[in-house]
Length: 291
Image (cartoon, rainbow, N blue to C red):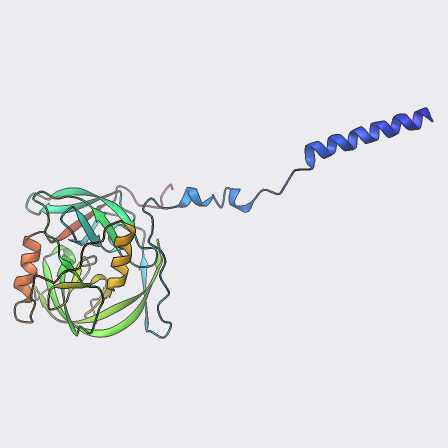
């Protein structure tokens, strides 16, 4: 019996030790897999604005690809307060190694700007950067409310330009590629442009879309050169991203008046006064290479 007691004691000790060293083991969580890093490791530096309600599924849909930037590029931005806050399109500043606001085109001098916030579901973003002499802000509309014509200011193809357009309706814009967006937008058909030989609209992205009374009713984010259309984010999108950045400019009346006869002169004053500026996106190397 003593031999059986000895074996029983050895077996009991083995079971106890096995329970101590293996009883708490669990399967490694998926988030710890090298192929799926934890959320903290992949979160973008600028905190996105909260995702709004998805646009109506009954709207016509336009799709746009946000490609990986392989070289430096430029777009447009505009001042919304007197302390260096600017609005632009997200795709203008996404994937840049450095962003600058050009304040002297003759000497190509630019003030470095920081990305303050990007919208999680719309192609809009907030920049922060002071320029010499400051920039007088433009007025922002609360909503797009029955406007039938608009005026677009910016730097398409790197050239100073002003467009006059008519309202075509609401669409749903979905973006894919480097980042995704799904938002309700306004579509505008270009009636006239300055300069008249402007070959396309690329580069006007991020520029303001004005109502006739001088308030910003959208941000240019896409377009069709062939069809003569410009697609613009709605006021609700830029107010959301401004709120996320902690900047809420007071609503005020516009100090400009646009008409089909003098829109060129009004737009050029905005460019001369640096209320609308060219944004430079510097890309040191093709993004996605070696990341």
